[in-house]
Image (cartoon, rainbow, N blue to C red; front, top):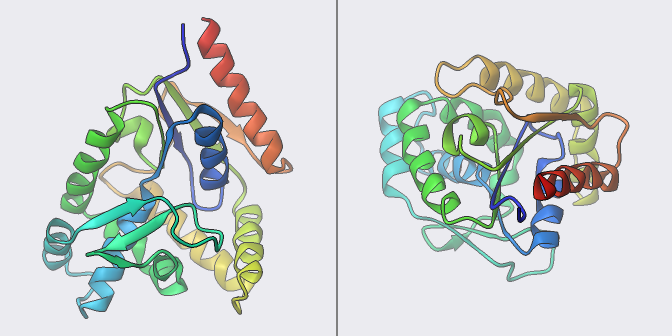
Length: 229
């Protein structure tokens, strides 16, 4: 049996999904697709247009009408790829604290999730993909060949996010990041549509105390196990 064609990696913010997922995709020569950027792009569009993030109807209309594009990096500044919103590069704009504070509200709207999930599913079913998110293994691609759920304590995840932003030269407050992550976890795990949780057949890896290389090797071991079965 060959390598799994569809690999789903889910987990809360700051659990290491993006970094590990990118390494796995590069190792296999697969497409790396972090679905969270789509929800962030919708959130940015909503804020830019002055729409109340709590107006579900207008927010959903935005999700349906905007164009979200992903392409290989055009600038070597640490980005995994270029994120385009209606043709404009918004790669770092979608990583702002303002987006962090609103993206879980918007991603909980059923119509927004339906619109974006359909786009994600079409891409995923083409195969040879490592897809990241919070509901890939449970909703978007339940038939994924390998489902991994990366987890970590909220304190550890806040520390990682803090160091990531310090490295980018941002002025950030650890306690604020911790508070926002806790709020986001609450929203993500309790929403009625596609709540954050491991799929029944997902392998859960707790990344507390592990460095990126160790987590990467753990996922590779699962891929190798799947290959020989």
